[in-house]
View 1: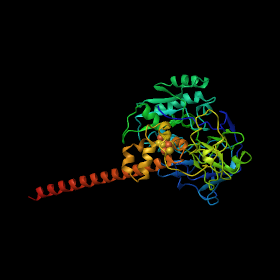
View 2: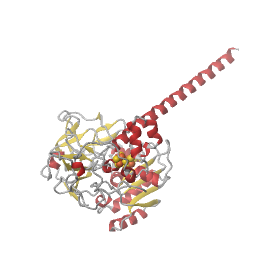
View 3: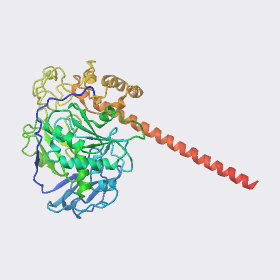
View 4: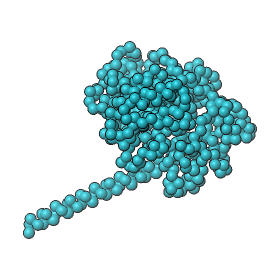
Length: 471
Ligand code: SF4
Ligand code: SF4
Protein backbone atom coordinates (compact mmCIF):
# COMPACT_ATOMS: atom_id res chain seq x y z
CA UNK A 1 0.00 0.00 0.00
CA UNK A 2 1.41 3.39 -0.97
CA UNK A 3 0.24 7.01 -0.85
CA UNK A 4 -2.97 7.80 1.01
CA UNK A 5 -3.56 10.60 3.46
CA UNK A 6 -5.78 11.30 6.43
CA UNK A 7 -7.39 14.70 6.01
CA UNK A 8 -7.14 16.66 9.28
CA UNK A 9 -10.57 18.19 9.23
CA UNK A 10 -12.78 19.37 12.08
CA UNK A 11 -16.35 18.14 12.52
CA UNK A 12 -15.93 14.37 13.07
CA UNK A 13 -18.76 12.54 14.89
CA UNK A 14 -18.21 10.33 17.93
CA UNK A 15 -18.44 6.63 17.07
CA UNK A 16 -21.85 6.26 18.74
CA UNK A 17 -25.22 6.10 17.03
CA UNK A 18 -28.29 8.18 17.83
CA UNK A 19 -31.85 7.41 16.87
CA UNK A 20 -33.88 10.05 15.06
CA UNK A 21 -37.61 10.28 15.80
CA UNK A 22 -39.73 9.00 12.91
CA UNK A 23 -40.85 11.86 10.64
CA UNK A 24 -44.45 12.56 9.55
CA UNK A 25 -43.74 11.70 5.92
CA UNK A 26 -40.99 10.02 3.94
CA UNK A 27 -39.60 11.37 0.66
CA UNK A 28 -37.95 8.42 -1.09
CA UNK A 29 -35.74 9.53 -4.01
CA UNK A 30 -36.13 7.34 -7.10
CA UNK A 31 -32.41 7.62 -7.86
CA UNK A 32 -29.28 7.26 -5.78
CA UNK A 33 -25.61 7.19 -6.60
CA UNK A 34 -25.62 3.93 -8.61
CA UNK A 35 -29.28 2.96 -8.70
CA UNK A 36 -32.23 4.28 -10.69
CA UNK A 37 -35.56 2.90 -9.50
CA UNK A 38 -37.32 3.73 -12.77
CA UNK A 39 -39.80 0.83 -12.64
CA UNK A 40 -42.42 1.95 -10.10
CA UNK A 41 -44.51 -0.96 -8.78
CA UNK A 42 -47.12 0.90 -6.70
CA UNK A 43 -50.07 3.15 -7.46
CA UNK A 44 -51.24 6.51 -6.19
CA UNK A 45 -53.09 6.14 -2.88
CA UNK A 46 -52.06 2.50 -2.36
CA UNK A 47 -51.46 1.38 1.23
CA UNK A 48 -48.15 -0.46 1.54
CA UNK A 49 -46.60 -2.44 4.38
CA UNK A 50 -43.05 -2.16 5.71
CA UNK A 51 -40.65 -4.00 3.40
CA UNK A 52 -43.00 -3.95 0.38
CA UNK A 53 -41.41 -3.23 -3.00
CA UNK A 54 -42.15 0.34 -4.17
CA UNK A 55 -39.98 0.33 -7.29
CA UNK A 56 -37.07 -1.58 -8.84
CA UNK A 57 -33.97 -0.69 -10.85
CA UNK A 58 -34.39 -2.61 -14.14
CA UNK A 59 -30.76 -1.95 -15.18
CA UNK A 60 -29.34 -3.44 -11.97
CA UNK A 61 -30.87 -6.88 -11.47
CA UNK A 62 -34.18 -5.38 -10.29
CA UNK A 63 -32.69 -4.21 -6.98
CA UNK A 64 -35.77 -2.93 -5.12
CA UNK A 65 -36.62 0.25 -3.28
CA UNK A 66 -38.48 -1.01 -0.20
CA UNK A 67 -41.04 0.82 1.92
CA UNK A 68 -39.20 1.59 5.20
CA UNK A 69 -42.54 1.94 7.05
CA UNK A 70 -46.13 1.19 6.22
CA UNK A 71 -47.99 4.13 4.65
CA UNK A 72 -50.02 5.59 1.82
CA UNK A 73 -48.23 6.12 -1.50
CA UNK A 74 -48.19 9.56 -3.13
CA UNK A 75 -46.61 9.47 -6.57
CA UNK A 76 -47.19 12.92 -7.96
CA UNK A 77 -46.42 15.19 -5.00
CA UNK A 78 -42.67 15.62 -5.38
CA UNK A 79 -40.95 14.99 -8.70
CA UNK A 80 -38.44 12.13 -8.67
CA UNK A 81 -39.70 10.81 -5.30
CA UNK A 82 -42.22 8.40 -3.87
CA UNK A 83 -43.81 10.08 -0.86
CA UNK A 84 -45.15 7.91 1.97
CA UNK A 85 -47.88 9.49 4.04
CA UNK A 86 -49.82 8.45 7.17
CA UNK A 87 -46.87 6.40 8.32
CA UNK A 88 -47.31 3.27 10.36
CA UNK A 89 -43.99 2.92 12.16
CA UNK A 90 -45.16 0.24 14.55
CA UNK A 91 -46.19 -2.45 12.07
CA UNK A 92 -44.09 -5.62 12.12
CA UNK A 93 -41.94 -6.61 9.19
CA UNK A 94 -43.81 -8.00 6.24
CA UNK A 95 -42.41 -11.28 4.93
CA UNK A 96 -41.02 -10.16 1.57
CA UNK A 97 -41.98 -11.98 -1.60
CA UNK A 98 -39.36 -14.56 -2.54
CA UNK A 99 -38.04 -14.78 1.00
CA UNK A 100 -38.00 -18.56 0.79
CA UNK A 101 -36.23 -18.78 -2.59
CA UNK A 102 -32.54 -19.09 -3.44
CA UNK A 103 -30.16 -17.04 -1.29
CA UNK A 104 -29.50 -14.33 -3.93
CA UNK A 105 -33.25 -14.03 -4.60
CA UNK A 106 -33.97 -13.63 -0.88
CA UNK A 107 -31.26 -11.00 -0.49
CA UNK A 108 -32.64 -9.12 -3.49
CA UNK A 109 -36.21 -9.26 -2.18
CA UNK A 110 -35.15 -8.12 1.29
CA UNK A 111 -33.02 -5.21 0.06
CA UNK A 112 -29.64 -6.59 1.19
CA UNK A 113 -28.23 -7.31 -2.27
CA UNK A 114 -27.62 -3.62 -2.95
CA UNK A 115 -24.60 -3.81 -0.62
CA UNK A 116 -22.80 -6.35 -2.81
CA UNK A 117 -20.63 -4.85 -5.52
CA UNK A 118 -17.94 -5.76 -7.99
CA UNK A 119 -14.75 -4.75 -6.16
CA UNK A 120 -13.03 -3.43 -9.27
CA UNK A 121 -15.81 -1.45 -10.94
CA UNK A 122 -18.08 -0.64 -7.99
CA UNK A 123 -21.09 -1.85 -10.03
CA UNK A 124 -23.82 -3.93 -8.39
CA UNK A 125 -22.79 -7.59 -8.17
CA UNK A 126 -24.53 -10.01 -10.51
CA UNK A 127 -26.80 -12.34 -8.46
CA UNK A 128 -26.27 -15.09 -11.07
CA UNK A 129 -22.47 -14.71 -11.01
CA UNK A 130 -19.90 -16.46 -8.85
CA UNK A 131 -16.96 -14.50 -7.42
CA UNK A 132 -13.34 -15.69 -7.44
CA UNK A 133 -13.00 -14.09 -3.97
CA UNK A 134 -15.02 -11.99 -1.54
CA UNK A 135 -13.69 -8.98 0.39
CA UNK A 136 -15.50 -7.74 3.49
CA UNK A 137 -14.20 -4.45 4.85
CA UNK A 138 -14.89 -3.36 8.41
CA UNK A 139 -13.19 -0.03 7.66
CA UNK A 140 -14.52 3.21 6.30
CA UNK A 141 -11.71 5.70 6.25
CA UNK A 142 -13.19 8.64 4.40
CA UNK A 143 -13.65 11.48 6.89
CA UNK A 144 -16.81 11.24 9.03
CA UNK A 145 -18.47 8.14 7.53
CA UNK A 146 -19.47 5.35 9.90
CA UNK A 147 -17.09 2.38 9.77
CA UNK A 148 -16.95 -0.78 11.84
CA UNK A 149 -16.30 1.09 15.10
CA UNK A 150 -19.80 2.62 14.90
CA UNK A 151 -21.66 -0.08 12.96
CA UNK A 152 -20.44 -3.00 15.05
CA UNK A 153 -20.97 -1.61 18.53
CA UNK A 154 -22.76 -4.52 20.27
CA UNK A 155 -23.15 -6.40 16.97
CA UNK A 156 -20.09 -8.67 16.85
CA UNK A 157 -22.20 -11.82 17.17
CA UNK A 158 -24.34 -10.69 14.27
CA UNK A 159 -21.17 -9.98 12.28
CA UNK A 160 -19.92 -13.53 12.92
CA UNK A 161 -23.26 -15.00 11.75
CA UNK A 162 -23.31 -12.65 8.75
CA UNK A 163 -19.80 -13.74 7.74
CA UNK A 164 -20.89 -17.40 7.85
CA UNK A 165 -23.79 -16.51 5.52
CA UNK A 166 -21.48 -14.58 3.17
CA UNK A 167 -19.06 -17.51 3.13
CA UNK A 168 -21.95 -19.88 2.36
CA UNK A 169 -22.93 -17.78 -0.67
CA UNK A 170 -19.64 -18.60 -2.42
CA UNK A 171 -18.06 -21.46 -0.43
CA UNK A 172 -15.35 -22.15 -2.98
CA UNK A 173 -14.12 -18.53 -3.08
CA UNK A 174 -11.70 -17.26 -0.40
CA UNK A 175 -13.19 -14.72 2.01
CA UNK A 176 -10.94 -11.85 3.10
CA UNK A 177 -12.04 -9.71 6.05
CA UNK A 178 -10.24 -6.40 6.35
CA UNK A 179 -9.75 -5.11 9.90
CA UNK A 180 -7.85 -2.10 11.27
CA UNK A 181 -4.22 -2.61 12.24
CA UNK A 182 -4.83 -0.38 15.27
CA UNK A 183 -4.46 -1.55 18.89
CA UNK A 184 -7.99 -0.44 19.82
CA UNK A 185 -10.05 -2.94 21.92
CA UNK A 186 -12.68 -3.23 19.16
CA UNK A 187 -9.97 -4.18 16.64
CA UNK A 188 -8.86 -7.05 18.88
CA UNK A 189 -12.46 -8.24 19.38
CA UNK A 190 -13.06 -7.96 15.65
CA UNK A 191 -10.04 -10.13 14.86
CA UNK A 192 -11.34 -12.72 17.34
CA UNK A 193 -14.84 -12.70 15.83
CA UNK A 194 -13.47 -12.97 12.29
CA UNK A 195 -11.03 -15.76 13.18
CA UNK A 196 -13.99 -17.80 14.47
CA UNK A 197 -15.52 -17.77 10.98
CA UNK A 198 -14.38 -20.88 9.14
CA UNK A 199 -12.25 -20.09 6.11
CA UNK A 200 -12.07 -16.31 6.64
CA UNK A 201 -8.66 -14.71 6.16
CA UNK A 202 -7.97 -11.69 8.36
CA UNK A 203 -6.24 -8.85 6.53
CA UNK A 204 -5.10 -5.75 8.39
CA UNK A 205 -4.24 -2.54 6.59
CA UNK A 206 -2.95 0.85 7.77
CA UNK A 207 -5.69 3.25 8.87
CA UNK A 208 -5.08 5.69 6.03
CA UNK A 209 -7.64 6.90 3.49
CA UNK A 210 -8.43 5.27 1.02
CA UNK A 211 -6.92 1.90 1.99
CA UNK A 212 -10.44 0.57 2.51
CA UNK A 213 -11.21 0.95 -1.19
CA UNK A 214 -12.31 -2.46 -2.62
CA UNK A 215 -10.40 -2.01 -5.91
CA UNK A 216 -7.18 -1.21 -4.03
CA UNK A 217 -7.74 -4.11 -1.65
CA UNK A 218 -8.27 -6.52 -4.58
CA UNK A 219 -4.96 -5.35 -6.05
CA UNK A 220 -3.19 -5.46 -2.68
CA UNK A 221 -4.38 -9.04 -2.17
CA UNK A 222 -3.21 -9.87 -5.71
CA UNK A 223 -6.58 -11.33 -6.62
CA UNK A 224 -6.82 -12.41 -10.27
CA UNK A 225 -8.17 -9.70 -12.60
CA UNK A 226 -9.90 -10.14 -15.94
CA UNK A 227 -13.17 -9.49 -17.76
CA UNK A 228 -14.60 -12.85 -16.57
CA UNK A 229 -13.23 -12.75 -13.03
CA UNK A 230 -15.27 -10.97 -10.40
CA UNK A 231 -14.34 -10.16 -6.83
CA UNK A 232 -17.27 -9.29 -4.58
CA UNK A 233 -16.95 -6.46 -2.07
CA UNK A 234 -19.27 -6.07 0.93
CA UNK A 235 -19.04 -3.34 3.55
CA UNK A 236 -19.69 -4.22 7.18
CA UNK A 237 -23.26 -2.87 7.13
CA UNK A 238 -23.86 -5.15 4.14
CA UNK A 239 -22.81 -8.18 6.21
CA UNK A 240 -25.25 -7.09 8.94
CA UNK A 241 -28.00 -6.67 6.32
CA UNK A 242 -27.27 -10.16 4.95
CA UNK A 243 -27.43 -11.52 8.51
CA UNK A 244 -30.79 -9.84 9.20
CA UNK A 245 -32.20 -11.08 5.89
CA UNK A 246 -31.01 -14.70 6.10
CA UNK A 247 -31.27 -15.30 9.84
CA UNK A 248 -34.56 -13.55 10.58
CA UNK A 249 -36.02 -12.81 7.12
CA UNK A 250 -35.96 -9.10 8.03
CA UNK A 251 -36.01 -6.52 5.21
CA UNK A 252 -33.18 -4.04 5.15
CA UNK A 253 -34.93 -0.73 5.72
CA UNK A 254 -32.54 1.18 7.98
CA UNK A 255 -29.25 2.96 7.40
CA UNK A 256 -26.60 4.55 9.55
CA UNK A 257 -25.95 7.99 8.12
CA UNK A 258 -23.24 10.25 9.47
CA UNK A 259 -24.18 13.90 9.80
CA UNK A 260 -20.94 15.79 10.21
CA UNK A 261 -18.56 18.44 8.94
CA UNK A 262 -17.23 21.83 9.98
CA UNK A 263 -20.66 23.49 9.65
CA UNK A 264 -22.52 21.03 11.93
CA UNK A 265 -23.13 21.89 15.59
CA UNK A 266 -23.13 18.32 16.95
CA UNK A 267 -21.62 15.84 14.50
CA UNK A 268 -23.42 12.52 14.94
CA UNK A 269 -24.15 9.16 13.34
CA UNK A 270 -27.91 8.77 12.95
CA UNK A 271 -29.89 5.55 12.56
CA UNK A 272 -32.68 6.44 10.16
CA UNK A 273 -34.67 5.13 7.24
CA UNK A 274 -34.34 6.15 3.57
CA UNK A 275 -36.73 8.95 2.77
CA UNK A 276 -36.13 10.80 6.06
CA UNK A 277 -36.54 14.50 5.17
CA UNK A 278 -33.16 16.20 4.74
CA UNK A 279 -34.67 19.49 5.97
CA UNK A 280 -35.56 17.82 9.31
CA UNK A 281 -31.97 16.64 9.74
CA UNK A 282 -30.51 20.06 8.98
CA UNK A 283 -33.00 22.04 11.08
CA UNK A 284 -31.25 23.76 13.99
CA UNK A 285 -28.15 21.63 13.57
CA UNK A 286 -25.96 23.99 11.52
CA UNK A 287 -23.49 26.44 13.02
CA UNK A 288 -22.61 28.16 9.76
CA UNK A 289 -24.82 29.32 6.92
CA UNK A 290 -24.95 29.36 3.99
CA UNK A 291 -23.73 25.78 3.93
CA UNK A 292 -23.11 23.17 1.27
CA UNK A 293 -24.50 19.69 1.91
CA UNK A 294 -22.54 16.85 0.36
CA UNK A 295 -24.23 13.50 -0.14
CA UNK A 296 -21.50 11.09 1.00
CA UNK A 297 -17.98 11.71 2.22
CA UNK A 298 -15.90 14.84 2.09
CA UNK A 299 -13.70 13.66 -0.77
CA UNK A 300 -15.90 11.45 -2.90
CA UNK A 301 -19.41 12.71 -2.16
CA UNK A 302 -21.51 14.81 -4.53
CA UNK A 303 -23.22 18.08 -3.71
CA UNK A 304 -26.80 17.31 -2.68
CA UNK A 305 -29.23 18.68 -5.21
CA UNK A 306 -31.79 21.12 -3.74
CA UNK A 307 -34.48 18.99 -5.44
CA UNK A 308 -33.59 15.96 -3.31
CA UNK A 309 -36.02 16.05 -0.39
CA UNK A 310 -35.17 12.82 1.43
CA UNK A 311 -32.16 10.65 2.27
CA UNK A 312 -31.62 8.16 -0.56
CA UNK A 313 -31.34 4.42 -0.17
CA UNK A 314 -27.54 4.37 -0.64
CA UNK A 315 -26.71 7.37 1.53
CA UNK A 316 -23.77 6.85 3.91
CA UNK A 317 -23.49 10.40 5.17
CA UNK A 318 -24.41 14.05 4.84
CA UNK A 319 -21.29 16.19 5.13
CA UNK A 320 -21.81 19.90 5.60
CA UNK A 321 -19.25 22.63 4.90
CA UNK A 322 -19.70 26.39 4.95
CA UNK A 323 -20.11 28.29 1.70
CA UNK A 324 -17.94 31.38 1.22
CA UNK A 325 -19.88 34.63 1.41
CA UNK A 326 -17.20 36.93 -0.02
CA UNK A 327 -13.91 36.71 -1.86
CA UNK A 328 -10.70 37.64 -0.01
CA UNK A 329 -7.96 39.32 -1.97
CA UNK A 330 -5.07 36.90 -2.66
CA UNK A 331 -6.71 34.38 -0.34
CA UNK A 332 -5.02 31.46 -2.09
CA UNK A 333 -1.65 32.73 -0.92
CA UNK A 334 -2.76 33.33 2.65
CA UNK A 335 -4.64 30.29 3.85
CA UNK A 336 -5.97 30.54 7.38
CA UNK A 337 -7.71 28.07 9.68
CA UNK A 338 -11.17 28.86 8.32
CA UNK A 339 -10.19 29.95 4.84
CA UNK A 340 -9.18 26.85 3.01
CA UNK A 341 -11.34 24.87 0.66
CA UNK A 342 -12.57 21.37 1.47
CA UNK A 343 -10.94 20.21 -1.69
CA UNK A 344 -8.52 21.77 -4.18
CA UNK A 345 -7.01 23.71 -1.31
CA UNK A 346 -3.62 25.29 -0.81
CA UNK A 347 -1.12 22.52 -0.21
CA UNK A 348 1.70 24.37 1.54
CA UNK A 349 0.23 24.11 5.02
CA UNK A 350 -1.70 20.86 4.72
CA UNK A 351 0.95 18.79 6.42
CA UNK A 352 -0.19 19.41 9.94
CA UNK A 353 -2.02 17.41 12.61
CA UNK A 354 -4.34 20.30 13.36
CA UNK A 355 -7.96 19.73 12.37
CA UNK A 356 -8.96 22.37 9.87
CA UNK A 357 -12.33 24.02 9.47
CA UNK A 358 -12.53 23.58 5.72
CA UNK A 359 -15.15 25.37 3.71
CA UNK A 360 -16.40 25.09 0.15
CA UNK A 361 -14.72 28.16 -1.39
CA UNK A 362 -11.77 27.79 -3.74
CA UNK A 363 -10.01 31.00 -2.57
CA UNK A 364 -8.83 31.82 -6.08
CA UNK A 365 -9.09 30.45 -9.58
CA UNK A 366 -7.85 27.23 -11.15
CA UNK A 367 -4.24 27.67 -12.28
CA UNK A 368 -1.95 25.64 -14.59
CA UNK A 369 -0.14 22.61 -13.17
CA UNK A 370 3.15 23.60 -11.56
CA UNK A 371 4.50 20.02 -11.56
CA UNK A 372 4.88 19.93 -7.78
CA UNK A 373 4.17 16.18 -7.69
CA UNK A 374 1.91 16.35 -4.61
CA UNK A 375 -0.87 14.50 -6.45
CA UNK A 376 1.44 11.58 -7.31
CA UNK A 377 2.72 11.48 -3.71
CA UNK A 378 -0.74 10.88 -2.25
CA UNK A 379 -2.17 8.75 -5.08
CA UNK A 380 -2.77 5.24 -3.69
CA UNK A 381 -3.09 3.77 -7.20
CA UNK A 382 0.56 4.42 -8.07
CA UNK A 383 -0.23 6.46 -11.17
CA UNK A 384 0.84 9.98 -12.13
CA UNK A 385 -2.30 12.15 -12.12
CA UNK A 386 -0.39 15.21 -13.37
CA UNK A 387 0.88 13.33 -16.45
CA UNK A 388 -2.59 11.94 -17.21
CA UNK A 389 -3.99 15.47 -16.74
CA UNK A 390 -1.58 16.74 -19.42
CA UNK A 391 -2.68 14.00 -21.84
CA UNK A 392 -6.35 14.69 -21.22
CA UNK A 393 -5.84 18.45 -21.53
CA UNK A 394 -4.38 17.80 -24.99
CA UNK A 395 -7.20 15.34 -25.84
CA UNK A 396 -4.81 12.37 -25.97
CA UNK A 397 -7.10 9.68 -24.57
CA UNK A 398 -4.95 6.77 -25.83
CA UNK A 399 -1.93 8.19 -23.99
CA UNK A 400 -4.04 8.50 -20.84
CA UNK A 401 -4.95 4.86 -21.28
CA UNK A 402 -1.29 3.91 -21.70
CA UNK A 403 -0.45 5.76 -18.47
CA UNK A 404 -3.08 3.61 -16.70
CA UNK A 405 -5.92 6.01 -16.00
CA UNK A 406 -7.97 2.82 -15.49
CA UNK A 407 -6.19 2.25 -12.16
CA UNK A 408 -7.64 5.43 -10.62
CA UNK A 409 -10.01 4.52 -7.76
CA UNK A 410 -11.57 7.99 -7.56
CA UNK A 411 -10.48 8.70 -3.99
CA UNK A 412 -10.13 12.44 -4.70
CA UNK A 413 -6.89 12.94 -2.78
CA UNK A 414 -5.15 14.36 -5.86
CA UNK A 415 -7.82 17.07 -6.22
CA UNK A 416 -7.58 17.76 -2.51
CA UNK A 417 -3.84 18.41 -2.41
CA UNK A 418 -3.42 20.16 -5.75
CA UNK A 419 -2.27 23.76 -5.12
CA UNK A 420 -3.46 24.72 -8.61
CA UNK A 421 -6.98 23.52 -7.69
CA UNK A 422 -7.24 21.25 -10.71
CA UNK A 423 -10.13 18.81 -10.31
CA UNK A 424 -8.03 15.83 -11.29
CA UNK A 425 -10.47 13.30 -9.84
CA UNK A 426 -13.35 14.36 -12.09
CA UNK A 427 -11.07 14.51 -15.15
CA UNK A 428 -9.68 11.04 -14.55
CA UNK A 429 -13.02 9.44 -13.72
CA UNK A 430 -14.60 10.96 -16.85
CA UNK A 431 -11.76 9.58 -18.98
CA UNK A 432 -12.11 6.18 -17.33
CA UNK A 433 -15.83 6.13 -18.06
CA UNK A 434 -15.33 7.05 -21.75
CA UNK A 435 -12.64 4.36 -22.16
CA UNK A 436 -14.83 1.76 -20.49
CA UNK A 437 -17.77 2.62 -22.72
CA UNK A 438 -15.52 2.35 -25.80
CA UNK A 439 -14.21 -1.01 -24.60
CA UNK A 440 -17.73 -2.32 -23.99
CA UNK A 441 -18.87 -1.11 -27.44
CA UNK A 442 -15.88 -2.88 -29.06
CA UNK A 443 -16.59 -6.07 -27.11
CA UNK A 444 -20.28 -5.98 -28.12
CA UNK A 445 -19.29 -5.41 -31.75
CA UNK A 446 -16.82 -8.34 -31.66
CA UNK A 447 -19.49 -10.60 -30.12
CA UNK A 448 -22.05 -9.55 -32.76
CA UNK A 449 -19.47 -10.18 -35.50
CA UNK A 450 -18.69 -13.64 -34.08
CA UNK A 451 -22.43 -14.43 -33.91
CA UNK A 452 -22.87 -13.32 -37.55
CA UNK A 453 -19.91 -15.48 -38.64
CA UNK A 454 -21.31 -18.51 -36.78
CA UNK A 455 -24.72 -17.98 -38.41
CA UNK A 456 -23.17 -17.69 -41.88
CA UNK A 457 -21.16 -20.87 -41.27
CA UNK A 458 -24.26 -22.75 -40.13
CA UNK A 459 -26.21 -21.55 -43.19
CA UNK A 460 -23.32 -22.61 -45.46
CA UNK A 461 -23.22 -26.06 -43.84
CA UNK A 462 -26.99 -26.39 -44.30
CA UNK A 463 -26.70 -25.43 -47.99
CA UNK A 464 -23.91 -27.95 -48.55
CA UNK A 465 -26.00 -30.66 -46.91
CA UNK A 466 -29.02 -29.77 -49.06
CA UNK A 467 -26.78 -29.87 -52.20
CA UNK A 468 -25.52 -33.35 -51.26
CA UNK A 469 -29.08 -34.65 -50.87
CA UNK A 470 -30.11 -33.24 -54.30
CA UNK A 471 -27.14 -34.92 -56.04
S1 SF4 B 1 -5.58 9.69 -9.49
FE1 SF4 B 1 -7.40 8.62 -8.75
S2 SF4 B 1 -6.61 7.15 -7.28
FE2 SF4 B 1 -4.99 8.66 -7.60
S3 SF4 B 1 -5.32 10.20 -6.01
FE3 SF4 B 1 -6.45 10.89 -7.78
S4 SF4 B 1 -8.53 10.11 -7.54
FE4 SF4 B 1 -7.18 8.98 -6.11
S1 SF4 C 1 -0.72 18.55 -7.47
FE1 SF4 C 1 -1.60 19.85 -9.08
S2 SF4 C 1 0.02 21.31 -9.53
FE2 SF4 C 1 1.01 19.65 -8.40
S3 SF4 C 1 1.73 18.22 -10.00
FE3 SF4 C 1 -0.33 17.55 -9.42
S4 SF4 C 1 -1.66 18.54 -10.91
FE4 SF4 C 1 0.28 19.64 -10.98
